[in-house]
Amino acid sequence: MNTRELIINTALNITAEKGWNGLLLVDVARSCDMTFSALLEWFQDKTDILVGYGRLLDLKTQSEMGQVDHELPLKDNLFDALMTRIDLLSEHRDAVVNILKSLKCEPISGFIILPYMAHSMQKMLEICGYKPVGMRGHMAVMALGYAYLQTLRAWMYDDSVDLSKTMAALDKNLGYFEKAGF
Image (cartoon, rainbow, N blue to C red; front, side, top):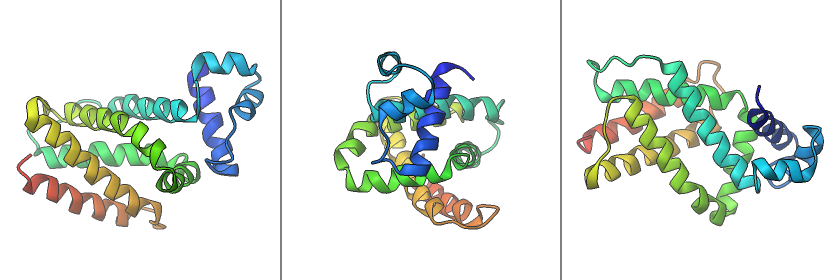
């Protein structure tokens, strides 16, 4: 595990224990056995760590997806990509749920990360063979982002072992995406 991943994983572990509001960068630095100033060379604040986590999820999703069958409908490939991403989120479920609940109360942080989430959704579309260009591409990114966020709401409360409620929500939300003509 490289330094970037160590910091992100440590921050997520602390968040799972203390909540997003209880996460202090000084605690992350201490847990990573580094100075606070060394940590700041990697991440400037908690939101920066969250953005780094999103980028890490993008890379891991792409890696785990491997070669996508472009003969399949876009909806099927997006289902696989987003479920892969959600499976990765599940590795740090308690932390991610804490973050999502906190962001509902901290709209400023939510607004800060929206462009990064849009970038991630663009990556998911590209992984699945859809080239989001022009106004239609922007609309597809926003529609997929909405479908993903709605699915995360279901995932937060899905206590099933196989994430069946999450998969049903994702299928439903991607159905809306598909009906919109993407």
